[in-house]
Length: 267
Image (cartoon, rainbow, N blue to C red):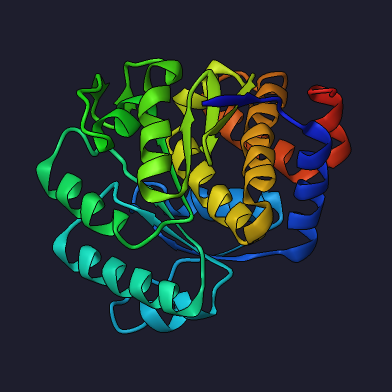
């Protein structure tokens, strides 16, 4: 893969444009993180919707700016709703994002994720163990957490990006964004992001919001990855533990703009 520099100027413009657009993100996510995900979207300038009924998801997915499918607490009823939403999103041209939570550990969700991959996701966002498992390689995970560093999944991310013609984001201490044979790396953040349940899942929702910009999805996805990292860095300065960190993270996400993003990663 060709290495691309992180263009923080383009990311800054994309972040400001994303906030101005206020994309409506339809979140089919896991029950553990729904509230936090909604708050992260709101703080970041997007609009969340948690429409989950099988009778409603297809109608709403066609109206939304983007759709998130997160398999963290998958069951058969939710799987049926997710299928309906993804099919409707494809028909309507609504970009959708897959978050393959713990895909390597359990065969039901692994088979389901591979089924959904055939429906042209705009992006896939996962940790190193999840991306490796999705590509058919044995990753090291513990539940929903990865014991692998993000760079260990880089080859698998590139493979998935080529195979499914999509943007693949593997997150960790360094985030890697793979698209069209290119890879972009963004380093930073704070270790306390791993001590609050749902930061990765919420980032996947932000990636869905970013994909609503469609032709600019790489710049916009890079922008929201950088936003979460900078938000974590700022929250670490104003918190005493994971509880206050979560609140400080929401506050930070609500104040970071494009200029602050560019200042943190000057070109």
